[in-house]
Amino acid sequence: MKTEIYGTLGPSCAKTEILREMLLLGMTGIRLNLSHMSLAEAEPMLTALRRAETECGRSCNLLIDMQGPELRIGALKEPLTLTEGTRIDLSSLCIPDMVRDSVLPGQEILLDDGKLLLEAEASGRAFVKRGGMLKSRKSISLPGSEIRLPPLTEADLGNIACAADHGVTGIMQPFVRSAEDLTAVRTALNAAGGQKIRLFAKIEDLNGVACLPSLMNAADEIVIARGDLGNAMPLWELPAVQKQISAACRKAGKPFMVVTQMLSSMEQRSVPTRAEVSDIFNAVLDGAASVMVTGETAVGKYPAETIRYLANTAAEAERYLPG
Image (cartoon, rainbow, N blue to C red; front, side, top):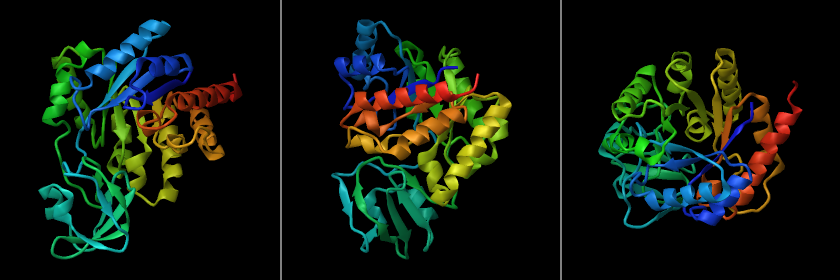
Protein backbone atom coordinates (compact mmCIF):
# COMPACT_ATOMS: atom_id res chain seq x y z
CA MET A 1 0.00 0.00 0.00
CA LYS A 2 1.29 3.46 -0.89
CA THR A 3 2.05 5.70 2.07
CA GLU A 4 -0.20 8.75 2.42
CA ILE A 5 1.76 12.03 2.50
CA TYR A 6 0.32 14.79 4.65
CA GLY A 7 1.30 18.42 5.03
CA THR A 8 -0.24 21.03 7.32
CA LEU A 9 -2.08 24.06 6.02
CA GLY A 10 -0.84 27.42 7.24
CA PRO A 11 0.43 30.86 6.20
CA SER A 12 3.54 29.55 4.43
CA CYS A 13 1.68 27.33 1.99
CA ALA A 14 -1.82 28.85 1.77
CA LYS A 15 -1.40 30.05 -1.81
CA THR A 16 -2.84 28.19 -4.76
CA GLU A 17 0.48 28.00 -6.62
CA ILE A 18 2.34 26.57 -3.61
CA LEU A 19 -0.38 24.05 -2.80
CA ARG A 20 -0.48 22.99 -6.46
CA GLU A 21 3.26 22.32 -6.37
CA MET A 22 2.90 20.35 -3.13
CA LEU A 23 0.18 18.19 -4.69
CA LEU A 24 2.28 17.56 -7.79
CA LEU A 25 5.23 16.58 -5.59
CA GLY A 26 3.20 13.85 -3.90
CA MET A 27 1.07 15.36 -1.12
CA THR A 28 -2.12 13.30 -0.77
CA GLY A 29 -3.61 14.97 2.30
CA ILE A 30 -3.38 18.09 4.42
CA ARG A 31 -4.07 18.87 8.07
CA LEU A 32 -5.79 21.98 9.36
CA ASN A 33 -5.09 22.78 13.00
CA LEU A 34 -8.26 24.16 14.59
CA SER A 35 -6.68 25.05 17.93
CA HIS A 36 -6.39 28.64 16.76
CA MET A 37 -9.23 29.10 14.26
CA SER A 38 -12.55 27.71 13.09
CA LEU A 39 -13.37 26.01 9.80
CA ALA A 40 -15.26 29.13 8.75
CA GLU A 41 -12.23 31.32 9.47
CA ALA A 42 -10.06 28.97 7.40
CA GLU A 43 -12.26 29.39 4.32
CA PRO A 44 -9.70 31.48 2.33
CA MET A 45 -7.05 28.78 2.80
CA LEU A 46 -9.51 26.03 1.89
CA THR A 47 -10.50 27.94 -1.24
CA ALA A 48 -6.83 28.09 -2.28
CA LEU A 49 -6.58 24.34 -1.68
CA ARG A 50 -9.62 23.56 -3.84
CA ARG A 51 -8.28 25.75 -6.65
CA ALA A 52 -4.95 23.95 -6.49
CA GLU A 53 -6.73 20.58 -6.71
CA THR A 54 -8.65 21.73 -9.78
CA GLU A 55 -5.59 23.18 -11.51
CA CYS A 56 -3.46 20.05 -11.15
CA GLY A 57 -6.26 17.48 -11.38
CA ARG A 58 -5.46 15.84 -8.04
CA SER A 59 -7.64 15.49 -4.95
CA CYS A 60 -6.43 15.93 -1.40
CA ASN A 61 -7.70 14.52 1.88
CA LEU A 62 -8.54 17.18 4.47
CA LEU A 63 -7.96 16.38 8.14
CA ILE A 64 -9.11 18.76 10.85
CA ASP A 65 -7.26 18.60 14.16
CA MET A 66 -9.65 19.27 17.05
CA GLN A 67 -8.91 21.24 20.22
CA GLY A 68 -10.02 18.27 22.32
CA PRO A 69 -8.98 17.80 25.96
CA GLU A 70 -5.71 19.67 25.55
CA LEU A 71 -4.64 22.37 27.97
CA ARG A 72 -3.47 25.65 26.43
CA ILE A 73 -2.51 29.07 27.68
CA GLY A 74 -4.86 31.92 26.86
CA ALA A 75 -4.42 34.95 24.62
CA LEU A 76 -1.32 36.96 25.50
CA LYS A 77 -1.19 40.68 24.72
CA GLU A 78 2.14 40.00 23.05
CA PRO A 79 4.68 37.15 22.94
CA LEU A 80 6.65 36.72 26.16
CA THR A 81 10.35 35.97 26.42
CA LEU A 82 10.96 33.56 29.29
CA THR A 83 14.61 33.84 30.32
CA GLU A 84 16.31 30.73 31.65
CA GLY A 85 17.22 31.02 35.32
CA THR A 86 14.58 33.64 36.16
CA ARG A 87 11.32 33.38 38.09
CA ILE A 88 7.89 34.35 36.78
CA ASP A 89 4.35 34.68 38.09
CA LEU A 90 2.20 31.98 36.47
CA SER A 91 -0.72 34.41 36.24
CA SER A 92 1.29 36.44 33.70
CA LEU A 93 1.18 33.46 31.31
CA CYS A 94 -2.64 33.33 31.11
CA ILE A 95 -2.57 29.75 32.40
CA PRO A 96 -6.09 28.42 33.06
CA ASP A 97 -7.28 28.48 36.67
CA MET A 98 -7.71 24.69 36.70
CA VAL A 99 -4.00 24.32 35.93
CA ARG A 100 -2.82 26.85 38.52
CA ASP A 101 -5.05 25.21 41.14
CA SER A 102 -3.57 21.79 40.37
CA VAL A 103 0.09 22.75 40.39
CA LEU A 104 2.11 21.97 43.51
CA PRO A 105 5.67 23.11 44.24
CA GLY A 106 8.12 20.95 42.31
CA GLN A 107 5.68 20.21 39.47
CA GLU A 108 7.24 20.55 36.03
CA ILE A 109 5.27 22.60 33.50
CA LEU A 110 6.00 22.07 29.80
CA LEU A 111 4.89 24.76 27.36
CA ASP A 112 4.67 24.79 23.55
CA ASP A 113 5.19 21.05 23.01
CA GLY A 114 7.99 21.00 25.57
CA LYS A 115 10.09 23.77 24.04
CA LEU A 116 9.89 25.66 27.36
CA LEU A 117 10.20 24.09 30.82
CA LEU A 118 9.18 25.61 34.15
CA GLU A 119 9.24 24.25 37.69
CA ALA A 120 6.44 25.41 39.98
CA GLU A 121 7.32 27.06 43.25
CA ALA A 122 5.19 28.40 46.10
CA SER A 123 2.83 31.39 45.83
CA GLY A 124 1.98 30.87 42.17
CA ARG A 125 5.50 31.40 40.88
CA ALA A 126 7.72 29.21 38.70
CA PHE A 127 11.41 28.89 37.90
CA VAL A 128 12.34 28.94 34.19
CA LYS A 129 14.52 25.88 33.55
CA ARG A 130 14.37 26.05 29.74
CA GLY A 131 13.51 29.42 28.26
CA GLY A 132 12.37 30.85 24.97
CA MET A 133 9.59 32.77 23.28
CA LEU A 134 6.02 31.97 24.37
CA LYS A 135 3.09 32.87 22.12
CA SER A 136 -0.66 32.72 22.68
CA ARG A 137 -2.62 29.45 22.75
CA LYS A 138 0.43 27.21 23.10
CA SER A 139 0.07 23.84 24.80
CA ILE A 140 0.57 23.10 28.50
CA SER A 141 1.59 19.72 29.86
CA LEU A 142 1.97 18.68 33.49
CA PRO A 143 4.01 15.43 33.52
CA GLY A 144 2.62 12.96 36.05
CA SER A 145 -0.55 14.97 36.65
CA GLU A 146 -3.95 14.49 35.04
CA ILE A 147 -6.67 17.12 34.68
CA ARG A 148 -9.84 15.54 33.31
CA LEU A 149 -11.49 17.56 30.53
CA PRO A 150 -14.41 16.65 28.22
CA PRO A 151 -13.32 15.15 24.87
CA LEU A 152 -14.92 17.94 22.80
CA THR A 153 -15.04 21.69 23.31
CA GLU A 154 -17.89 23.93 22.14
CA ALA A 155 -15.62 25.04 19.30
CA ASP A 156 -15.02 21.40 18.33
CA LEU A 157 -18.76 20.73 18.17
CA GLY A 158 -19.23 23.80 15.98
CA ASN A 159 -16.53 22.64 13.58
CA ILE A 160 -17.92 19.10 13.47
CA ALA A 161 -21.35 20.49 12.62
CA CYS A 162 -20.06 21.94 9.35
CA ALA A 163 -17.23 19.46 8.61
CA ALA A 164 -19.07 17.57 5.86
CA ASP A 165 -20.03 20.82 4.12
CA HIS A 166 -16.35 21.84 3.99
CA GLY A 167 -15.21 18.58 2.43
CA VAL A 168 -13.49 17.24 5.55
CA THR A 169 -12.42 13.61 5.10
CA GLY A 170 -10.97 12.97 8.57
CA ILE A 171 -11.01 14.23 12.14
CA MET A 172 -7.99 14.02 14.43
CA GLN A 173 -8.98 13.69 18.07
CA PRO A 174 -6.20 14.83 20.44
CA PHE A 175 -5.20 13.19 23.71
CA VAL A 176 -7.46 10.16 23.35
CA ARG A 177 -7.84 8.61 26.82
CA SER A 178 -10.44 5.91 26.17
CA ALA A 179 -12.71 4.41 23.53
CA GLU A 180 -15.48 6.52 25.08
CA ASP A 181 -13.69 9.68 23.85
CA LEU A 182 -13.87 8.36 20.29
CA THR A 183 -17.49 7.28 20.70
CA ALA A 184 -18.38 10.83 21.70
CA VAL A 185 -16.70 12.21 18.57
CA ARG A 186 -18.32 9.61 16.31
CA THR A 187 -21.76 10.36 17.78
CA ALA A 188 -21.30 14.07 17.07
CA LEU A 189 -20.10 13.30 13.55
CA ASN A 190 -23.06 11.04 12.78
CA ALA A 191 -25.49 13.65 14.06
CA ALA A 192 -23.92 16.21 11.69
CA GLY A 193 -24.08 13.98 8.61
CA GLY A 194 -20.41 13.01 8.82
CA GLN A 195 -20.81 9.24 8.74
CA LYS A 196 -18.16 8.92 6.01
CA ILE A 197 -15.59 11.05 7.81
CA ARG A 198 -12.71 8.97 9.18
CA LEU A 199 -11.68 9.21 12.83
CA PHE A 200 -7.97 9.49 13.72
CA ALA A 201 -7.03 8.81 17.36
CA LYS A 202 -3.96 10.77 18.49
CA ILE A 203 -1.85 8.98 21.09
CA GLU A 204 -0.25 11.83 23.04
CA ASP A 205 0.22 10.60 26.60
CA LEU A 206 0.68 7.44 28.64
CA ASN A 207 -3.08 7.07 29.14
CA GLY A 208 -3.46 6.76 25.38
CA VAL A 209 -0.67 4.19 25.20
CA ALA A 210 -2.23 2.14 28.00
CA CYS A 211 -5.69 2.06 26.44
CA LEU A 212 -4.47 1.44 22.88
CA PRO A 213 -6.02 -2.06 22.54
CA SER A 214 -9.48 -0.66 23.29
CA LEU A 215 -9.10 2.01 20.59
CA MET A 216 -8.54 -0.33 17.68
CA ASN A 217 -12.24 -0.88 16.94
CA ALA A 218 -13.26 2.72 17.65
CA ALA A 219 -10.67 4.49 15.46
CA ASP A 220 -10.12 4.35 11.72
CA GLU A 221 -6.44 5.22 12.15
CA ILE A 222 -4.04 5.60 15.08
CA VAL A 223 -1.75 8.63 15.19
CA ILE A 224 1.63 8.38 16.94
CA ALA A 225 1.77 12.07 17.88
CA ARG A 226 5.33 12.34 19.13
CA GLY A 227 5.21 15.97 20.29
CA ASP A 228 3.21 15.67 23.48
CA LEU A 229 3.93 11.95 23.70
CA GLY A 230 7.60 12.85 24.02
CA ASN A 231 6.73 15.20 26.88
CA ALA A 232 5.10 12.34 28.82
CA MET A 233 8.35 10.41 29.27
CA PRO A 234 12.11 10.85 29.09
CA LEU A 235 12.73 11.59 25.42
CA TRP A 236 15.08 8.63 24.98
CA GLU A 237 12.17 6.30 25.80
CA LEU A 238 10.01 7.65 22.97
CA PRO A 239 11.46 5.51 20.13
CA ALA A 240 10.63 2.30 21.99
CA VAL A 241 7.06 3.48 22.61
CA GLN A 242 6.71 4.38 18.93
CA LYS A 243 7.87 0.86 18.04
CA GLN A 244 5.42 -0.60 20.56
CA ILE A 245 2.47 1.29 19.09
CA SER A 246 3.52 0.44 15.52
CA ALA A 247 3.73 -3.27 16.37
CA ALA A 248 0.33 -3.23 18.10
CA CYS A 249 -1.27 -1.56 15.06
CA ARG A 250 0.31 -4.05 12.65
CA LYS A 251 -0.93 -6.95 14.75
CA ALA A 252 -4.46 -5.53 14.83
CA GLY A 253 -4.42 -4.63 11.13
CA LYS A 254 -5.04 -0.98 12.04
CA PRO A 255 -3.52 1.80 9.88
CA PHE A 256 -1.29 4.24 11.75
CA MET A 257 0.30 7.61 11.12
CA VAL A 258 3.62 8.98 12.39
CA VAL A 259 3.87 12.73 12.98
CA THR A 260 5.98 15.46 14.63
CA GLN A 261 9.41 16.82 13.71
CA MET A 262 9.84 14.48 10.75
CA LEU A 263 11.59 17.26 8.85
CA SER A 264 11.80 19.90 11.57
CA SER A 265 15.04 21.42 10.30
CA MET A 266 13.29 22.31 7.05
CA GLU A 267 11.36 25.05 8.78
CA GLN A 268 14.61 27.00 8.27
CA ARG A 269 16.75 24.94 5.88
CA SER A 270 16.11 23.75 2.32
CA VAL A 271 17.78 20.37 2.94
CA PRO A 272 16.92 18.02 5.85
CA THR A 273 19.30 16.18 8.12
CA ARG A 274 20.29 12.58 7.46
CA ALA A 275 18.64 11.63 10.76
CA GLU A 276 15.31 13.09 9.58
CA VAL A 277 15.16 11.17 6.32
CA SER A 278 16.17 8.02 8.21
CA ASP A 279 13.28 8.65 10.61
CA ILE A 280 10.78 8.83 7.72
CA PHE A 281 12.28 5.77 6.05
CA ASN A 282 12.06 3.70 9.23
CA ALA A 283 8.50 4.81 9.97
CA VAL A 284 7.43 3.49 6.57
CA LEU A 285 9.41 0.26 7.08
CA ASP A 286 7.54 -0.15 10.38
CA GLY A 287 4.28 -0.10 8.43
CA ALA A 288 3.05 3.49 8.71
CA ALA A 289 0.05 4.09 6.46
CA SER A 290 0.63 7.86 6.67
CA VAL A 291 3.40 10.30 7.55
CA MET A 292 2.80 13.96 8.29
CA VAL A 293 4.69 17.20 8.67
CA THR A 294 3.28 20.13 10.65
CA GLY A 295 5.14 23.40 11.13
CA GLU A 296 7.45 22.52 8.25
CA THR A 297 4.74 23.40 5.71
CA ALA A 298 2.46 25.58 7.88
CA VAL A 299 5.05 28.18 8.86
CA GLY A 300 8.34 26.95 7.38
CA LYS A 301 10.35 28.56 4.61
CA TYR A 302 10.31 25.58 2.23
CA PRO A 303 6.85 23.94 2.20
CA ALA A 304 7.09 22.43 -1.29
CA GLU A 305 10.64 21.13 -0.80
CA THR A 306 9.51 19.58 2.48
CA ILE A 307 6.86 17.58 0.67
CA ARG A 308 9.41 16.55 -1.98
CA TYR A 309 11.68 15.03 0.67
CA LEU A 310 8.81 13.47 2.60
CA ALA A 311 7.23 11.86 -0.46
CA ASN A 312 10.48 10.73 -2.07
CA THR A 313 11.83 9.22 1.14
CA ALA A 314 8.59 7.34 1.75
CA ALA A 315 8.65 6.06 -1.84
CA GLU A 316 12.24 4.89 -1.43
CA ALA A 317 11.24 2.98 1.71
CA GLU A 318 8.36 1.35 -0.17
CA ARG A 319 10.79 0.16 -2.84
CA TYR A 320 12.98 -1.33 -0.11
CA LEU A 321 10.12 -3.28 1.47
CA PRO A 322 10.00 -6.98 0.49
CA GLY A 323 7.23 -8.12 -1.85
